Image (tube, rainbow, N blue to C red):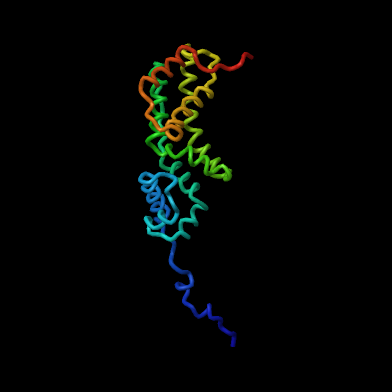
Length: 206
């Protein structure tokens, strides 16, 4: 007679354990989003996310290796990329673009971007996903707005598009984290005016 091990005597259903919860991931993301809105990035913890989602920490870590990866996925999946329509009016389009930058970096998921980038500095995979799926699509839209203005002759042909966008994004990001303060409408208008008059960084002569 072939000996029977203890494992062989346990019913198959019991050996398999509890089946995976198909809704666990979405509940975790919803819990993380709520906590992020209420407490800010620095106060989000895996313990609290797991508690709010009704899952174990082990379940959270099955999907994400650490908090930055979780918040990165949240931003990727829940950040709408809004276009700037071609209206033929360069000044209006630049103003719309600047306002979208402000809205995203101050009121939307983008408000955690600066902290998240710092937190993922030693995690190339998460940082690359953030840049490829969050930053790059918005950057492409912004570049197109300035390039349309160049094509119309409203902006100088040698405008350094990336430098202008870095300056605009950097100013807004600094007002969010370094010196929290509202960016007044007249400041936005003045910065758009500077672009329209060519008083912005230029590319070196070729």
